[in-house]
Amino acid sequence: MFELHPRLQQDCIVLGRFPLCLLLLMNDSHYPWFILVPERAEAREIFQLSELDQLQLMRESSALAQAISEVFQADKINIAAIGNLVPQLHVHHVARYRDDIAWPKPIWGYAEAVPYDAAGIAAVKSRLEPALGDSYTAQP
Image 1 (cartoon, helix red, strand yellow):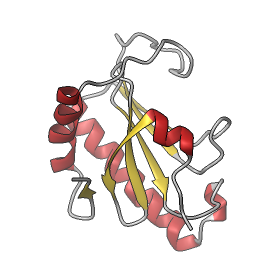
Image 2 (image 1 turned 180 degrees about the vertical axis):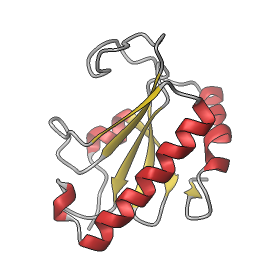
Image 3 (image 1 turned 120 degrees about the vertical axis):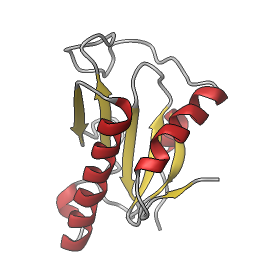
């Protein structure tokens, strides 16, 4: 049975879901930072997913990246499935800007997270969710 890793529960806000993945917002307002988590028990690596799930993950990742690009007008979108601290398969999608606090370095460990307030979360949701398409279902 699928359960979201405790670290992801602690560090993120569940925004909604695609057919395969939960969509999370990393609770760090320095960057528009989203995470897709395939809802498959024990998945640690992409190759452990079925071929159909691998293709679905790519579709969902591409849809999310396109929406981030359109909505947040990033200079670059960083996409990574690292998993050194959280072994559960999850894919980061981060909008980067030439003037963000970590540019051009990686964001991990660069600065203390600045959590969103309720208005900030609502603003991200209202901007992003209309661009995600019909296969996305928002969390109430």
